[in-house]
Length: 258
Ligand code: BTN
Image (cartoon, rainbow, N blue to C red; front, side, top):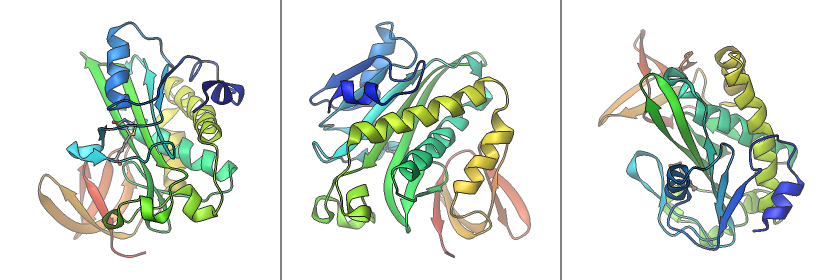
């Protein structure tokens, strides 16, 4: 990847102004935490062409194809109320959907962090945070997107797709990334200026593909079936099971009714 091509397409003030590029690494999220320890500035981006031990949500692995996937982590120092932590995967999802739309690809969000095209997964987000007292000190936003992979390069069992498979043309990962950062900075500023939940809740709901749909909700080894009502002011999922609403901060959704 070419860092100067990313930076040439940025309209941001802070995000992506400093970039650490590695030809290969185990996990860009892990690298980001190391950089924080070494005194990294907010907005620093870690990218790699070959991530060998990528981390997914809930302790899962994240597999990427060298030179074809977009694997990146962004360092933020929000210093906001820790209750806003749940918004980071959601605002990142909004930014990704809008960036891909600018490049001609229509995607939708599946709570809390999956980027979907026609029911298939194009990418995911892994946000990790460090909280001090009630203050959200650091957030690392890890983004993994399938960009130029062909069908035979993606694991069959994962119901995955790529930008290439959906559009039949290859795409510059640098441009995709710059557009994500441009959108992300706007939404991050919205959150910081305390306009967060109201505006972002609306944006996220518009981009979600399962509001008011029947879903299976899996959390803490328990599976419930209910209607996904939406998200609350903390970005948590509201599920209605037999008339009773339950709030979930984490879990997995399987959409039953499309
Ligand atoms: C998910 O489970 O859907 C989230 C996947 C997040 C993967 C990205 S790839 C870049 C960053 N580094 C990691 O180790 N994981 C995230």
